[in-house]
Image (cartoon, rainbow, N blue to C red; front, side, top):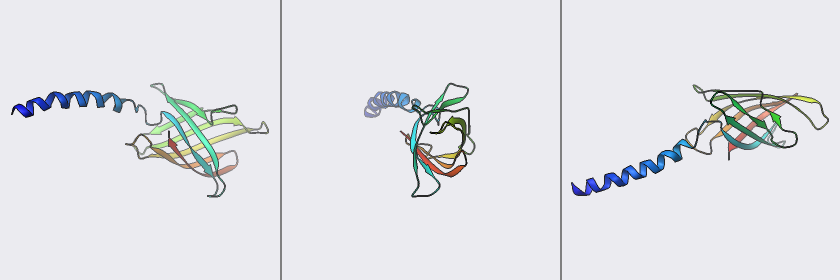
Length: 133
C-alpha cells in the first residue's frame, strides 16, 4: 500500500507536465504547412500555407513571402475535418489569380498532421499534400 501511495505524486507530476504540451497543439489548422501541388506526379510546385486562429476565424497566407496571398476565406468542418481556403493574388506577370483549396485534415491526433485534396490556382487544377511543420 505504501508503494502505491508514493507513486501517486509522481504520476500527478507527470500529468501536470504533459497537460501543457497537449494544449500547445491549439487549433487543428494553426501553424505552417509545407508540401506541393500539381496536375501530375511529375509536375509539382512547392507550396506553404501559414494559418492562424484568433478564436473566431482562420487567417494567414498562401506562400508567405514577396508574392504572398492573404487568406480571404477559410473554414474547417470539424465533423469531416474538411478544409476550404480561398484567396486572390498576383502571378509573376501581375495578373490576378484566384486560389481555391479544398482538402481534408488527416492524422489529426499527431503533431505532423497533413492535408490532402484539390488545389486550384487560376485556371490550373491539381492535387496537393501539405504537412504541418
